[in-house]
Image (cartoon, rainbow, N blue to C red; front, side, top):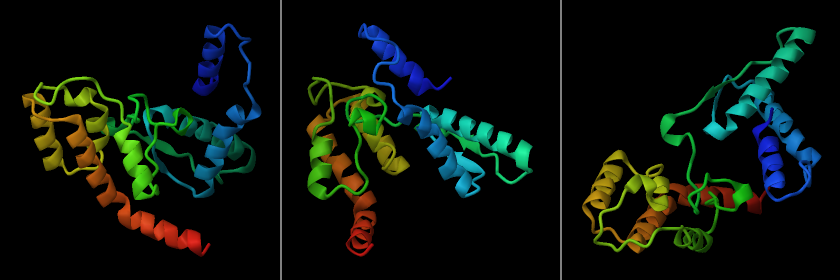
Length: 194
């Protein structure tokens, strides 16, 4: 039933390989590890993207089975999926995922952060052309970090024309740096003194 397994099989079949080519135990163990992480903290509500909903369902299945045998010891969590963050777009337009290598690491140093942002895939429209903000990879990431007023203003500029992708990458970089700077500093302090 796991969608990660079904995707691996489909990819193998499309490449003319046997269905289980390069499918390893980690693919099956990962949902169990996720369940352990959730159940350990007795979490009731789990904020996830749409692609992670199945992990919460697997967690509920494991907890229900355990509770049937040993009594009501484990909390059955429920997924919270906010429509605006059902799927976060990655640098290349696909869903953001470490396996696609299209993420923006939260604790990346400013140089790496800049490099990642500057490599966001865009189309070839000129700055003066109107653009659909919702189909722009830069904007779809930006709207998760900027204030509602800033998002509204940039959305308007996209639709009217006059937004250059290079400019938007700089704007995104500024909002990411403002969001993560203090967290990165704290992270680095802990890493120096574990």
